[in-house]
Image 1: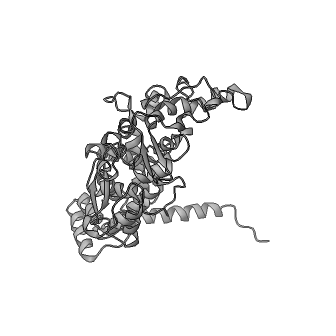
Image 2: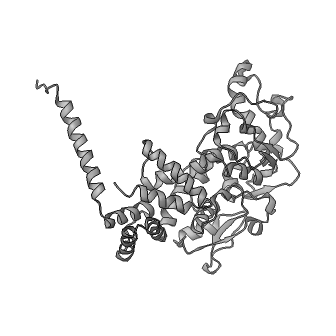
Image 3: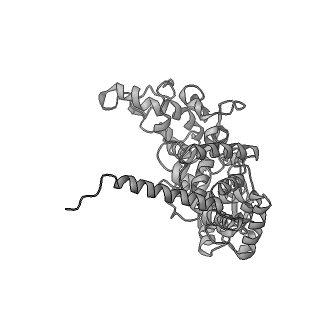
Length: 391
C-alpha cells in the first residue's frame, strides 16, 4: 500500500492558495474591456454587442461605471430574463421560477425599468400591463390571459409594458390597493382560503428576507391573537406561551390589515369587502372562544418594541393604521425591507451570497445608495455590477 507523505496536505493547501492568488492577480489586471463584458454578462445574462461593449469600455475608462451598468440594463434580456427570474418565485407559494408571467412580476419589472421608488412596492396603486398597441386580450381582474399571451408571444418587456393603476384596471378602490400585495397573482397565491396570514408570512419572506421563526418574540402581549389558535395545544399551555405566542402576538395584530380581502376561486379574482370582515377571520372560533374577535381592519405593529425593533421601523410613521396600504408603507419603509432588496440583487448579480466583511460593507454602502437615490433599484444593480465585475 502506498502511503502519502504527511506533508502532502500542506502542498495541496499551498497550491490552492497559489491558484487563488493568481486568480486575484488576473482580476486585478483585467482591463476595462474585460470588466465591461463581465458587467454586462452579470446584469443581462447575455453577451453584449460590439457597439455596446465599446461604449461600456469607454464609460469604465472615463470612470463612469454606473453609466456602463445602465447600458447593460438597456438590454431586453435584463428585464425578460434577469428580473423575471428574480421576481417570479416571489409570486407563488412554491417559490418556483417556472410560474407564468403575471401582474405581480410585470409590475415589479416595470417599476425597475421606470425607476419608480421601490418602497412603494407594497403600497402603491400601480399596475403594469402590455402596451395598448400589441393586440393583447384586455387585462382582467379574473384572468391571467393578458400576461400569458405576452409571454407566449415573446413580447419584449423593456419596450412592451405600460403603467396604469389597479383601481382603474381591476375596479378596486384606490385606498384598498397595496402594491403587489393586491395584485391578482399575489391574491391567488396568498389570500385564497386560509386565514390571510400567508400574505403576511410570504411578504416578510420575500421582501424583508425573514421567515416567522426568525422574528420569534414571546415578549409581546397575546391579547390580539385570534380565536383559532389553541392556548393549550396538545393539552400543554407551555407550547402556546413558548412557541405560538412568539409569532402570533406580533403577526395577528398586523394581519388584521387584510380583514376585508379574500381571493374568490370561483370568480378567479381578488375580492375586497369594505367595512365587512371576511368570514375566514372567525374560522375555528370554537378553538378558543375567549380569543380576539376581528371587528375591522385596524392593525398595529407591536414589533416596534422588543427585539424586532432591530428591523428598523421608520420613526416618521405611526406604527398603526387601517388596511393593507398603510401596512405596506410600514413594511416598505423599514431597514429590513431596504436591506433585503439589496441582498437579493447582490446574489443575482454577483452569483453568490455575501461571504465576508468586504461584502457586508458593500451591501451597507448599497443600502445607503438605494435610499439616497429615492429607492431606485437600478442604482443597486449598478453598484452590485461594479463591485462584482471581477471573477
